[in-house]
Length: 164
Ligand code: ACO
Image (cartoon, rainbow, N blue to C red; front, side):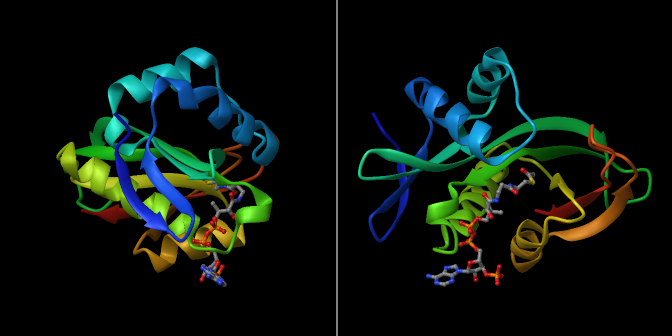
């Protein structure tokens, strides 16, 4: 049964199911240079379906966010060891941007990682990706670190995080 989390006009924001993975991969291929194996998508959906979320308009997939959980050093507390949610990837098709879909996807994934009892939530984003950095900042994420040459093409990333 589909779990609809919220509706934004004609756009349904809902938890992903196995049949959503191919459309999600298609959006990823169109929108981002970082791609993943089929197995990786399947494993994220199996691990934390609460934070693997799709946006759909009239039966067409227009966006997704997928996350994982990890244990590691806190991005806020010195020497703290915490459970962290990690945004692996988020994207909205170009023609559906600036309608609030990205914000809804991040907010619902925050709810999802909270359900998994994560203490913090973090992500990496290209330093040049102003739209994404602005979106995360509006939702309370702060830049905690600059990761030099994080991407294959040599670009730096910001590590942005939020305490839950
Ligand atoms: N009318 C006008 N503007 C609006 C409306 C509306 N109804 N609703 C929201 N907006 C504005 C927001 O205020 C925001 O404005 P701002 O940029 O001036 O602050 C802007 O639209 C974007 O907010 P959303 O609509 O919530 O986000 P969007 O759906 O456009 O998605 C995203 C943002 C995901 C970053 C998108 O640009 C994208 O897919 N980019 C390509 C892929 C990408 O870069 N992904 C992130 C990589 S990092 C990672 O994956 C961890």
